[in-house]
Image 1 (cartoon, helix red, strand yellow):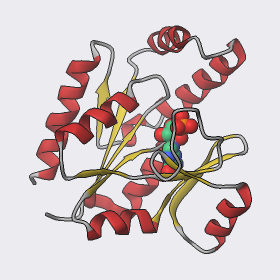
Image 2 (cartoon, protein in one colour; image 1 turned 45 degrees about the vertical axis):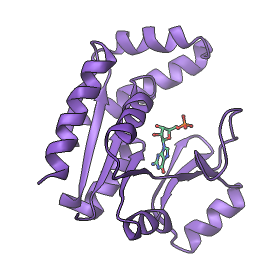
Image 3 (cartoon, helix red, strand yellow; image 1 turned 90 degrees about the vertical axis):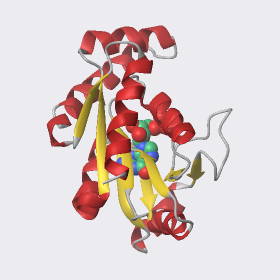
Image 4 (cartoon, helix red, strand yellow; image 1 turned 90 degrees about the horizontal axis):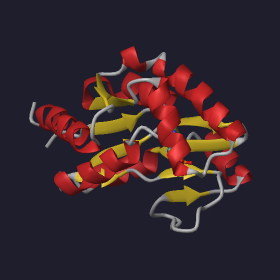
Length: 189
Ligand code: 5GP
């Protein structure tokens, strides 16, 4: 199989994580591309499985050594990036890297890999939809909700640059099915 990459992007709260999980179940050739980040590890997360958790200094050293294909300061002071070594490792095992990545990261991946990358934007439908979903999570303070919504608006303004936009305003299952069929077609090209 050709070395192809698939990246899933979109504002937080759109169901991106569920889509990634379902794709990993459905396509045995996919491997989850583990990103590096400087954010703190959450309780359920594992180092080197969910992320490579790095200090800011380590992250900056990796930038200096050109170890990232792309990296972004996704939130103020918090960096996330995809490492060359991660993608190389997967290609050497004949697996397709599946990325959960922010909008600008996805656009950089596309710029580099062109037809060897498929970038998909999971769209919340309306901002009101997203607001309701984030409120339901109950983990958001009003100020963090505002920040996320502002970021979501910015991200949505770039959605037309993606290979495919999936509007997740129905049940998540039908959105997942839609993504599966787009990915199927892409991998079998
Ligand atoms: P979280 O902290 O909730 O795991 O992720 C926050 C955001 O960072 C999400 O939008 C996620 O897709 C994005 N992200 C995760 N890994 C990467 C990466 O390697 N590069 C970029 N640019 N964004 C990433």
